[in-house]
Length: 235
Image 1 (cartoon, helix red, strand yellow):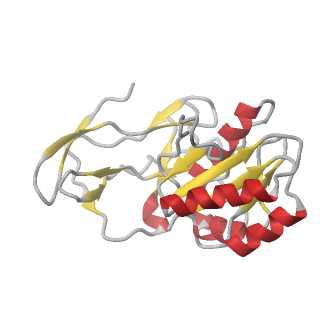
Image 2 (cartoon, rainbow, N blue to C red):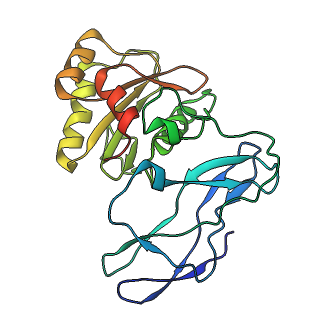
Image 3 (spheres, helix red, strand yellow):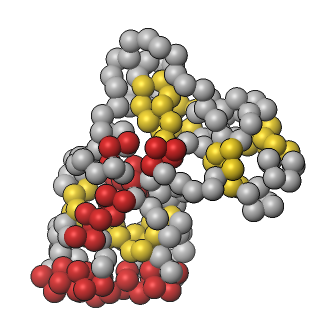
């Protein structure tokens, strides 16, 4: 388990304990971002893709990849970005590639690593990993049976994952859209079997991003709202 480090808020000067995030490296080793003790945080005035990612080298396999830069929110309202030292020079066994496409948001992402889909749970994990790759922090599962139609949540986003062999219906798309409207969030739909024609048309009208997944666990944008979501990431 990662050890916490002291962080001093530059606004109110309070001291907090921050536990650096841990991510799974491609080699399977848990990689904890090396946030330095007593690091001097930087207040986040605005976010850019370049500032949102940081290069870190895995100490086990020597692979260098881009990971979400750690942030911490103080109770005074200040959101601060924590510095991570640059990786030491050396030969890496593999460099993280860019995501598909040439857009400014995609160019700074590491290569997406899919999860093979064998069960319904695998489909949710694949969509969860994809949303994290897009830049959404804190992607989680609601765990509330009353929230039928929502499988994943993040700040400003609700998502539905349909692992069935039947194309998603018009009602499925509208239900997700209503959940998003109720929360003031964007809705994203992931389906293994695709979508009924009426569902695709309605999703375009409602600006609901649609993604299709194959058994390799790689989502592909199916409509213009999905392309825009991949291009810009969270807003």
